[in-house]
Image 1 (cartoon, helix red, strand yellow):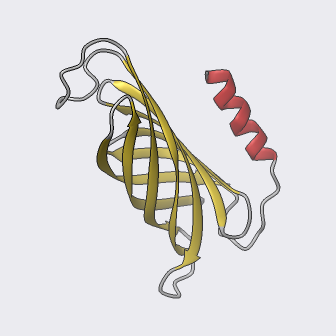
Image 2: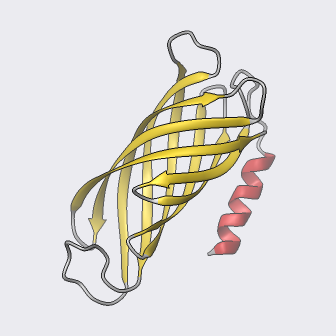
Length: 155
């Protein structure tokens, strides 16, 4: 699984993205309901993919989000983004405190995203905040919302 994720990240780094956005790629840390590592790759001036590998309720949650970015408040470097994607979670033990399920669990679901990101002008850092409403689809249906703060080194 690690080799697949690393290979996908490497291929995305090779993709030539437009230059109208403030950066092409970024990697950093995410804190919030699920905390971990975030990698974002722009595919065009306004479209990006974000990959999040996060720790969540004693498990690993892997999320891929397609995002559309638009300028915010006519402030250079400040952009709204929205979009959606999916996730898979691998859990050992009790998946969630509200569940009475023991043993390993694999969870599949869908996510949306809405947030705001600021690329600091003079240094290669971006800061973003977002809400990610999600729905677990397999093995049970459950709705939840994750809020987060992401700080990335951008290049």
